[in-house]
Length: 143
Image (tube, rainbow, N blue to C red; front, side, top):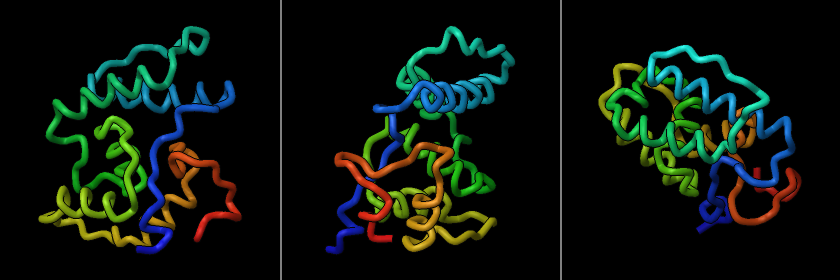
């Protein structure tokens, strides 16, 4: 088992500065609106903790059969998978397994190899997906 196999990832919900917290809450809020097919203005002054939005969106995803359609971009699919899972930390191999199972019969082939997923996660800051459980700086990561 390599070091990469041991690293788990999740959506970072703690130690966010005010702007990051607002940004993540807005990302989650807009997905909730999309799922409910409604348009409600987002009042940045009445923002709730991102965790609350994550729980609401996770429940909506669990009630939907189309939250992870084959046309979903891979970066968005990573984010949705964590939301669906209740932000349970996952390794790259677990992520690969979940996406492979969901998209097994897809007519939209895409590269969701471990290598590609590793590259995507290491270069995706806009979805707040980070290594889980211990402090990392970019130079300590194996990629």
